[in-house]
Amino acid sequence: MRMGPRIISVFIIAAACLSVCGQASGFGNKILVVVNDEVVTQADLDVALTPLTNELKKEFSGDELKAKIEEMRNEMLNQMVENKLILQEAKRRGVVVVESEIDERLKDVEMRFPSTSDFSNEVEKVGLTIAILRARYKEQLMMDKLVTHEVKDKVVVTPAEISDYYSKHKEEIRAPESVHLKNIMIRFDEATTEPLAKQKADDVYRLIKEGRDFSDLAKLYSQGAKAEEGGDLGFVSRGQMREEFDKVIFALTPGEACPPIKTDTGYYIFKVEEKKDAYLQPLSEVRDDVENVIFREKAQERYKEWIDKLKRDAFIQFK
Image (cartoon, rainbow, N blue to C red; front, side, top):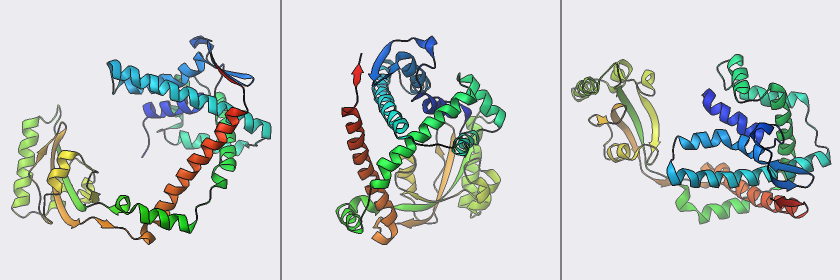
């Protein structure tokens, strides 16, 4: 699924500006941190934070918003210091990034836009150029390579660790109760008022009760996900759906459909085809997942040890 331009613009700015210095003097030039022979300024932090705080403002307000922004500010500033250290170390070690690698990174971001022109327009809109973006991605690739070499490549997960983790976390590994679910969604908006949508949903539910095939009705009337596939959502675990849906869905018996459920956007009718009880997944089924969990934990620990050493060996002064 393609990400929308608004979300992508946040991605571009955050990705490009975390390691930027001195690119936006118009935002102010107060020095916040000295990292060896480089600095992080208020301008750097403002440029990196702006798109992210704009997103926060859509979800929070008042004191909660202030607290969230302050928390993000501290996290971002610390991340920028760490990125400085990693990039400095990568340059000192002569980490090489070739143009084709930058091309690939840039293409990966561009592919998330509807078109090349949309991508270029968004880059320009957030005050960057393709040249600046390429330079930033080069730095990020240098950092990625060094972190991979110093952290990921040195993490080893043994079979014994996997077995031990499995035996100690069986409750967490249990597959939750799930149902094979189908749905029909009747939307209400300016074109279809809520009473009309309710009448249509009630009519569809009556047809279901009369024995009409649920999948056929979904193809004909549903405006929701997977309508063309008969509204088939596959297996859904408890907790994946909204709480009010869960309560209804998991009370249904196989073959049963529920009366229309009203939400703020429309009416939903669910049918349960099959139920599966919670069960402990055998190690053979979850080995890769367990290995990935252990790998991430060990990698995080190793990264912290490595970055802490870089900090100890560096000159860092917060102003």
